[in-house]
Length: 368
Ligand code: G6P
Image (cartoon, rainbow, N blue to C red):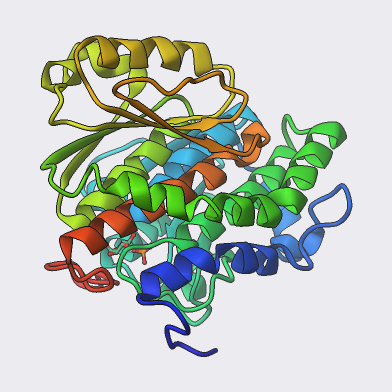
C-alpha cells in the first residue's frame, strides 16, 4: 500500500479524506443486505460470544474514546453490561472479574504497552476470552487475542488518529450486532443497523464537503488558549475525541464535558475568550442539549455548533452553526467526528504547528 501524501499537504488530511473509502473497505464481505455476515468476526466468534454476559473494554488515547462510544451501543442496543477503562489504570488496580466477561482491547497499532500488558494480565485473572479491534494484522494484540476484528484502515501515519478511530467504530458496531444476537438485538434492529452502515460512506463524503465552511470557522480559534467541547449521551465521547484532536495538534488547551454537567463547574470558565463547541445531532437529547447551550449563550460564551439540519438552530450573535446531513442515530458518532477532525486540522494549520508529528507525542507508545 502506498504511503505517500498524494495531493494532500499532510498525512492527517489525507487520512481524514480516506475515511469513506476505508470504511467501505472495512464493510466489504462483512455486510449482507440485512445482516452482519458470520465472516465479520471469523468462524470461532459465534460459539464464543454465545456465553458472554458482560464486556470489559481496555484501550488508550483515541482508541479509548472508541471504547467509550461502544459502551453506549453494547449496553443500549445489545443489552450487555459493559465497562471501559484506560489501560494504564486498569492494569494497576484491584478489581472483581464477573463470570463470562469478554476482555476487548482496541488499538490502532496493536503494540501499545499498557494495552498489551492489560491483555496479558486479564488472561491470568479469569476473563472468559479476549477480542481485539486492531489495525495491524501482525501485531502482538492480534497474535495474543482469541478473536480479532481488523479495522482495515490501511497504514495511519499522522500521529493524531483519524481513520483508525472511525474504522474502529465500524468494527465495534459489527461486534455489537454479533454479540447482541445472543441478547437483545432482533432481526429488525440488525437490519436497521446494517442499512445505516450501507449508507455510511456516502454520508461521510457529504460531511467532508463541509470542509470550506469549517476552515472559515477555524479562524475564530487560532488566537484562543482554551476551548470547551460539549456533547450528550453517545456524543459525549465524540466531544472528548474532538478535544483530544485539538490539543494534540494545535496545542490549544481543550476540555470536553457532557453538556448536562456544565452547571457543576465549567460554566464558571465561560466567557468570550473560551469558545464552546457542541455536537448536536437530532436525537432524543437534543432539547436537553439546547437548554445547556442557552446557559452558555446567556453568559456571553461563543458557541460553535455542528447540528443536524433539522435540529432547528438559528445563527445569531455568538452562535455559529454548521449544518450536517440528517443521519440515523446509530452512525451519528461516526459522522459527527469528521467536522471535529477538520476543525482541529485547520486550527493547527493557522497556528503553524507540525500537524503530522506534534511535539512530545508518538504514534505508538510501546514502552510504559
Ligand atoms: C498514542 C497515539 C494516539 C493513540 C494512542 C493509542 O498516544 O498518539 O493517536 O490513540 O497512542 O494507540 P493505539 O495504537 O493503541 O490505538
